[in-house]
Length: 280
Image 1: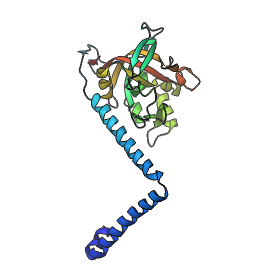
Image 2: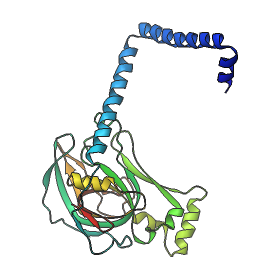
Image 3: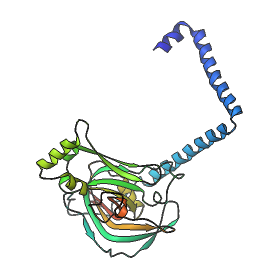
Image 4: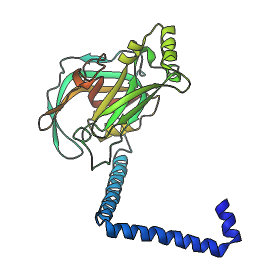
């Protein structure tokens, strides 16, 4: 508003000041570029990296924009049931090509099926196509899931979730009390349902997903907050130029000293069910 008033009452002075400011910035940049020749190179490289990553991100989203229904289920998804895990897996190790076109060995450790409520989703990486780790090139998406007696909208009035990827390959699901609540409020709610914080943590999963094909990935990417989903496939370890990732095989893993570096499952997904629609 003030800038508009100045331009109305003193148009000539305003125009001069605008030119002076522009010239001042331009001259400052030129002087810095002359004094520090590498600055221009870093600036141009940074712009190129951002453009390249942006194009890759657009390509990634377009690649998985459409999914085709393979069949329909008779029964609806029951998010309150426990995950089904059968060890050892019936599937032998197999080869899989990541988005970087490199070959990975997928080692199934258990047949796995989980019906759950989606509470978080993450497909973000740092500068896609530039700073991808080996894990980023094969595990294309993370889902935060709730199952059992905490898989309901009422519980989500007390707890919110954030799935994120840190710089590097570390990924985490962070539960937090909803604004205005505390962990004590969460605990009181759970106790009112004859549940505990331990029960909650063992029925919360952060699953790193390896899609069997583009149709499965497109279906996964279409998931929204509070969607009920059923995933079928395998919990897997990964080998690429030497073993580098292990999956959790227990819902009670809670720290970095446990198998899989905590409570995160690495899952090869063969089939996705959303409502009664099945994608394979």
